[in-house]
Image (cartoon, rainbow, N blue to C red):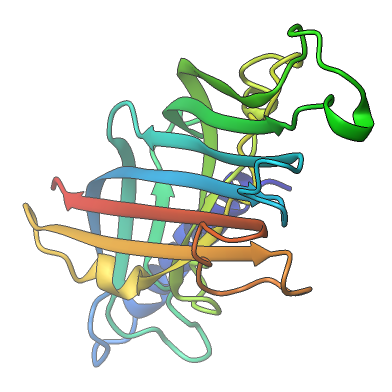
Length: 272
């Protein structure tokens, strides 16, 4: 069952609970009346996910030995093409007996069929390969046609106007009050420069952000209020360590170094 269907079911259950409480309370004069407050929000997300890598041979930069150095970047930029609408429902008052009033309900507007960013992918890299002279001395006489020296290959590509999925995870029942932003993968992210492109050109290691906000914060927003939350994550890898790093290593030196950096901004505005 999808998260949207689960939220719709919770919203329906909450509405039924409110109706039951309303009719039950109408016969109890000492109880505070149940009040239903509805609200509308618009949600926007922007961000960037960058993968950097560096590789260098041990023999670099000795001209008499073969060696290779490479430096590249894959960038995934994303934003909501337009604000997504959410509906809120807050119930206050006294519930009779064992009846428990539902918590704040926050659901996508009717007609929302999943969340997608407007996305752009870009890749660029530079590869340098040293070819030592393969003649002279014990290797035999040179003819003048021998290939030697540093060869440089530089390429870049980009893929614009893509649609990439994401999720907003939260629990309306209060078991997990924080809102999480989940960046999801998509087939358009794989080999976006083409399968014959000679370097890494896929979007990988997309993270999940547990933002420092929850449904209680959203429920407390006043009409016209605008709030934003920012998140940043890093993931590093290097041939010198067998485990992942929480921070990116320097992109230099022998061996291989990799770095994934992601920054996101979630903006919520209460419309009414």
